[in-house]
Every structure is written in structure tokens, then in C-alpha cells.
Amino acid sequence: MSVLEEISENLQKGKAKIVKELVQNAVDSGIDPETVLREGLLPGMSVIGEKFKNNEVYVPEVLVAARAMNTGAQVLKPYLEKAGVKAAGKVCIGTVQGDLHDIGKNLVKMMMEGKGLEVVDLGTDVAPETFIQTAIEQNCQIICCSALLTTTMGVMEEVVKKAVEAGIRDKVKIMIGGAPVDEAFCEKIGADKYTPDAASAADAAAEFCASMA
Ligand code: B1M
Image (cartoon, rainbow, N blue to C red; front, side, top):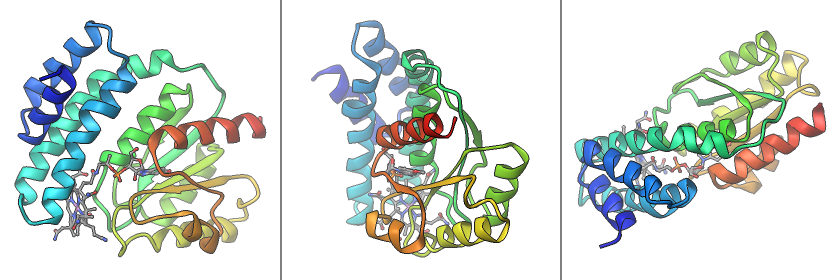
């Protein structure tokens, strides 16, 4: 079994300590950190996602797998940051109100930091007003919203509306992402950009910041 397969297997079993060691070993042996993320950690989390959907595993198993995922991702963080080129820009990011899923949001944050962007992490369950207030107070060029539930994706439309009400819509870009969200939804709510994954979100954010500089 390759080290990447081992990472995936151990992540699925929630073995955070072993995942941490394996991720460090993989990087030390010369495997590109982004490959470790894409071919080790993310596939492991996908398997758990499928099993959760099919009622083959339940919330506790998902939580320990999520913890292992985050532990492995933390090991990669400095390497992904080092690979990035410094770009001027500030972003605030959060998972929208009512939604506690933060693994994808954390990956987006990490990738954006890897591009040299300063990221204000608002955490999960973030009210629309908090996104707007933070963008104003901290001079963020971009507001980034993540949602994993069909019941919470509507909060993103509120963020767009509140930005208009606060008179900052022309000064701030609004980016959205997360499993239930797509391009058509982005257009419908009047957000600026939907991206399907963390790497393309980071690319888009860096481009926006460069164009707004
Ligand atoms: Co939740 N959950 N969950 N869950 N959970 C899903 C999302 C679900 C699809 C599972 C299922 O039933 N098939 C389902 C949602 C169904 C729906 O709405 N259509 C679901 C449900 C129903 C629930 C609960 C309601 C379950 C319950 O209690 N009955 C509950 C809700 C709690 C709440 O939020 N209020 C709940 C709870 C949980 C846990 C706490 C157990 C745990 C979260 C732990 C945590 O995040 N710390 C959890 C998990 C882990 C999942 C699954 C299994 C995995 C999600 C994940 O982390 N994926 C998920 C099933 C699945 O996805 N197959 C599921 C890995 C992550 C890397 O992907 O977040 O999509 P993702 O991020 C991607 C992209 O989407 C993108 O980049 C990332 C990768 O490159 N992206 C962006 C994300 N944000 C972006 C922002 C951007 C751009 C790109 O720009 C700003």
C-alpha cells in the first residue's frame, strides 16, 4: 500500500496521530504537499462522506475522521504557504449561519494563505451581518462564504443583500462555495464567483485582489 493510500485508510479510521505522522513522512520523502492533500487526505474524506450518505457510518465516525483530516491538513499548512507567492489582499471567510461544517472552509482558507492572502477566519455559523461588519472594519476586498447544507445556502443571498444595504457592494467581491452550491445559484443570488474546490477558490481570490489593487 502506498503512503497516500495509508493516509486515506487511517483517516477513515479516525487515527489522527498516525495520519499526522504519515503526512509528515510523505512530505519528507519528497511528495508534493498538494498531492498529499489531493490524493491522500481528500479521497479518505470522500469515502467517509459516501459511507455517511449510505448510513454505513454515523456522526461519531465522521467526527473522528474530520479530526484526522484537520490534523493532517495542519501538517501541510506551512508547506502550502511556503509554495505561495505573496499577493496583496485581505479576505474574510466563514461557514454561513446555521452550518457547522468547516473542513472545506478550512481548506479554502489554507489555500488562500498559500497564495499569500491575509485571511480573517470567522469560523462557522456566521451571521450575514458579521461578514459585512468584518469586511468594513478590516478592509477586506473579498467575502468568502461556505455552505454544506441545502438548508443554509440561502444565507449567502442574505450576505449579498446586506452588502448592498451597507453600501459596500461595489467595493467588495463575494465568493461562494460548498457542495450544494453551483454556478447557477451564484448567478441567481448575485454573488461574484463560485468555485468548486479550494485550489480554484484561492486562484480566483488572488486574481480578484490583483485586479482591485
Ligand atoms: Co454533515 N452533512 N451534517 N456533518 N456532512 C453533509 C454535508 C451531507 C451531504 C451528508 C449526507 O447526508 N449525504 C448532508 C447535507 C445534505 C444536504 O443538505 N443536502 C449533511 C447533514 C444532513 C448533516 C446534519 C444535518 C446531520 C444531522 O445532524 N442529522 C448535521 C448538520 C450540522 C450543522 O451544520 N448544523 C451534520 C453534521 C456533520 C458533522 C458535524 C458530523 C460533520 C462536520 C464536521 C466538520 O466539518 N468539522 C459532517 C460531515 C463531515 C459531513 C460530510 C460527511 C463531509 C463534509 C466534508 O467535510 N467534506 C458530508 C457528506 C459529503 O460531503 N459527502 C456531510 C470534505 C470537504 C473537503 O468538502 O466541505 O464540500 P467540502 O469542501 C470542498 C468544496 O465544496 C469546496 O472546497 C472544498 C474542497 O476543495 N468549498 C469551497 C467549500 N467551501 C468553499 C467556499 C468557496 C469555494 C469552495 O469559496 C468561498
